[in-house]
Amino acid sequence: MSDHIVKAYDSDLAQLKSMLSEMGGMAEEQLAKAIDALIRRDLKLADSVIAADQLLDAKEIEVEERAVLTIAKRQPMAQDLRNVMVTIRIAADIERIGDLAKNIAKRSHAIYDGIPQRLTKGLERMGQLSQAQLKLVLDAFASSDADKAMDVWRHDEDIDALYNSIFRELLTYMMEDPRMIGACTHLLFATKNIERIGDHATNIAENIYYLVHGYMLKEQRPKNDKTSVTPFSSLNND
Amino acid sequence: MSFKTVFTPAIPAIIAANAPKIVAQDVNVYYGEKSAIKELSITIPDKAVSAFIGPSGCGKSTFLRSINRMNDTIPSCRVTGKIAFDGMDIYDRAVDVVELRARIGMVFQKPNPFPKSIFENVAYGVRIHGLAKDKVDLERIVTESLQRASLWDEVKDRLAHAGTGLSGGQQQRLCIARAIAVNPEVILMDEPCSALDPIATARIEELISDLKQNFCIVIVTHSMQQAARVSDLTAFFHLGTLVEVGDTDAVFTNPQEKRTQDYITGRFG
Ligand SMILES: Nc1ncnc2c1ncn2[C@@H]1O[C@H](COP(=O)(O)OP(=O)(O)OP(=O)(O)O)[C@@H](O)[C@H]1O
Ligand SMILES: [Mg+2]
Image 1 (cartoon, helix red, strand yellow):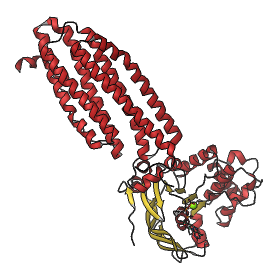
Image 2 (cartoon, rainbow over the protein chains, first blue to last red):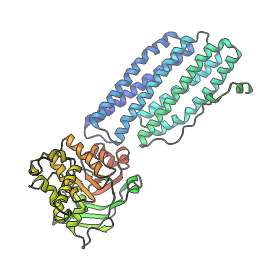
Image 3 (cartoon, each protein chain N blue to C red):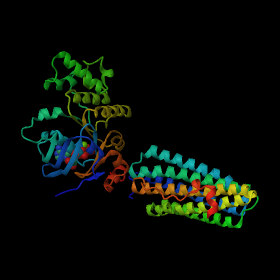
Image 4 (tube, chains in turn purple, red):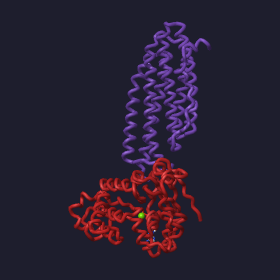
């Protein structure tokens, strides 16, 4: 896209974009650390994640203020307007991802009984998937690549599917050994949080689509999360 | 020679929803040898506001003036093609131009009240077109017109004072009162707010959205925000061609043509 007649307008938009990239980088790091802390039950690492969340919160406010100022000063139109609006929405999604990472980190404190080996594997895979999705969607934003964003959008199903199977597995453990209920419940919340991080990544993908095309994605995202309709009785018949 | 205007969307909703008031087909306007409007076709919907936007010199005023044959007053100016007003060809020889301009009124960029009283400014057109039954009726029309132009409260105690003694914004509203007093069907406005402060501008914009209940309004403006605020249909002109026409909401959020996008986002002058 060619430059604005007013050069300062270009630098306003460029600055918004770089602030958002920075936020994205922070969220990626928080998520990686949180999952690592949970799996290895590294409480020091967990605490550092919990403490660093406020930096992400502060950054979101900064991005929002910048965006509002840009609207007031430049009165953006068309693609520029979408750009600013999408920046505000993506910043909110990234901030939520940060909150969820913090919550995952908090769970490490609660799981003192240790995690069954098999579960750690699933958790690890889910963590890797969500991190890959987040990275990809942030790349897609940096390059305004709607196709890449749509890849992320479609692959959220994989996270949902994994969450499904971990969910069922956790329930089975709990039924077999009630002493596991405490740890498993926390793990259930942690995996649910990872699943929701995937949802935020798809929100970001939808916003990139809107930014590039100028209209909202009409398709419904393929959902593979069946946990809210899984009855206990079904678990024995696998 | 043919040029294709882009429609955003393919049939703008406001054109589909409202009756067509003015339909221009393959209109060309020349000043001597120089072509100022090229192969322009557009349907202007009734009871709606249509905005003409585009860089200076692109032909907005030229086309606007061709809608009520104001261009007739410029000797070198020649118009070809067809402009229909309620289905009637306005360039037909049988058309009474004075009557046409009463039905298609115009408000200019610079307020141009007559050097007469505020009352007379509004009453003049009503009288020459014989629209008032008697003196009482005339007073009623003048009062109502000033009220509709939201000027009444400011001038009701000095109707005999000169119209030229009003502030710029008041003069512009006086010209609008004068234009609506003769009960036109279409009001053409060429940059009506360019000399006004934000408050007077807001008043005129409020008036425009009020007037569109009953009139077909066309406004030329250099303010993208104003076009976005007041209009239902936006037409983007460039170098004498109509580049893109569409529902205002669509044009300002997602224009199809690169030239439209560049212009409304401030990327070229
Ligand atoms: N009376 C005239 N005689 C000769 N050429 C004219 C006349 N009026 C306008 N033009 C030319 O026709 C072209 C279109 O002018 P027009 O006034 O319609 O532009 P515009 O879009 O209204 O510009 P602006 O935004 O500056 O008012 C310009 O190149 C202009 O120089
Ligand atoms: Mg003009």
